[in-house]
Amino acid sequence: MDNFTPISALIGGSLIGLGTLLLLVTLGRIAGISGIASQALFQSDGRNWRLAFVVGLLLGPFVVGLIISDFSFSTPELNSRTLLAGLLVGLGTAWGSGCTSGHGICGIGRFSPRSIAATMMFMATGVVVASFF
Image 1 (spheres, rainbow, N blue to C red):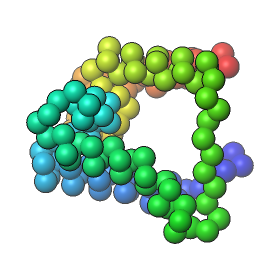
Image 2: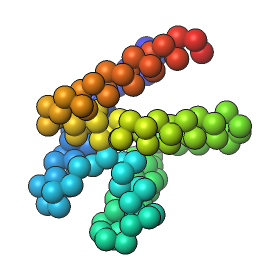
Image 3: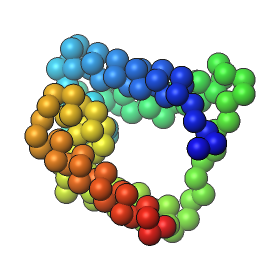
């Protein structure tokens, strides 16, 4: 564990929790990224806040990079493996009726049995797949 950074992880996790709480309290919505992104593209009702949310997710790292001088940001190499991984993640979120943010952060925080089961399943699957690669 060369990159053990508990302080930045605590700050980042707290900001994610605060953001999901604010979205729930202000709009009554769950911060599930896959649902927000797909509805921003394919649904006209509430599109503005959804687009703002997605744009904020994409621009956030660049803003942090401007504030913190030693921040380094790298993008993954775009190749067939990256595209296949993105496709599989998209299929998984559709089949699982949500993603890690919706189930893992918001669902577990609400003690949803379905979200707890989904999170246990994708974590176990991740461990198995990571052990092969």
